[in-house]
Length: 232
Image 1 (cartoon, rainbow, N blue to C red):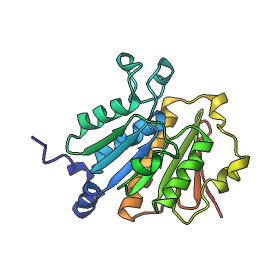
Image 2: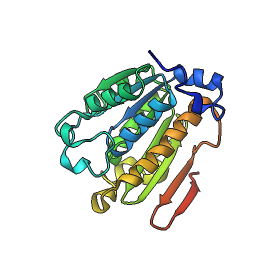
Image 3: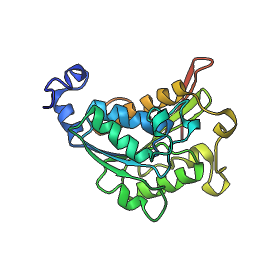
């Protein structure tokens, strides 16, 4: 039996009416690694009613340092399957659609169908541009996060916005991968940025708070610097 007090500690930060709105909401999380694992966990605990979880990869030992969903016993397990199992373990009231597939032009439209917003937890810049194109065509907002070492960034892109072009330049000029290929990534930075992404998701769904639209939040955890840049 579902515990009727599940969301008691959400109130009164989130009202009962807002909690009901979250229960009717649908979020698609693209990429289920260091960022995506944290995002789907927090959205599930907050009570977003439907989650679509997308990743074509399987866990390997290099994921154990930072990816919330990875465990020693599930190496070589599909990340999408592990994400679905984890979501149901913490909130069995939700509807979960899991796709073991790499996002590309042939499948993204179908996988985000019915979503109210999409979360970019990808690790290549070129795929981010592709995701933005598909999501904007669908008329949906996109919550994006990226990490490198102990630094991270978060932004929110609406259908009318230039989005990644303001961060990376034109798609044809952007590098395929970011600086994280040199710096690596650590667990606490991944979960910190995932928390900010989850927060932006809730704000967009509830139409509440100061949303990072046309803004880029940049955090450096070595220096404890947190800056918000205008992207205009």
